Length: 231
Image 1 (cartoon, rainbow, N blue to C red):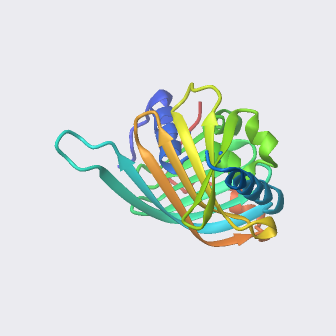
Image 2 (spheres, rainbow, N blue to C red):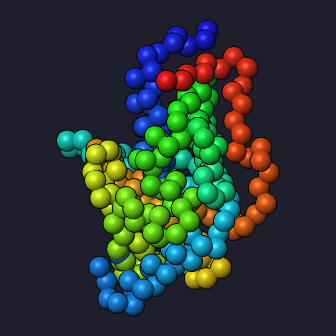
């Protein structure tokens, strides 16, 4: 039996929850050399990687309940992006979902609910700095809404911390780990903390920078029988 229609306010909350989990709703202490390396590595990635694709493993840790250990949920999937304004995340396990920005609209497909939610991309991405990192043209574009500071190198990566200048949404902090410099720079880790105390770590593998992605990559057509919800 097909799901019953929901009020769009509920759908809006579901979209924001998906963005939080993806580090989308989802980037410098240290001595001088760490600051230079972190900022330069991120700038190199923004400048040289005009498109990309990768697989990811995501671990979302919820705040522990009284007397219990923190709850961790692990998801797997793939992502792709095309600057200046398109990206796609496909979750394949344990829950199948797609988050897609086509340059105009933001789409959220939920296989379990058999629903597709559609909203203005500009409105949604205002709270999705991780997506902005995949589509921003340079550091100055990020610095319009975020404060950036270098962190010490760790785990073989150059780290950048991103904090919103105005805290009016769920985002509290984003950390980006970049591997390499110049044309070899690539994002390896995205760590996100939201206002609910939930943390998300997205580890990328099999990163390919500069692929020619077909236009169909950033097109989502609701499957037959799916409910399409718009504001």
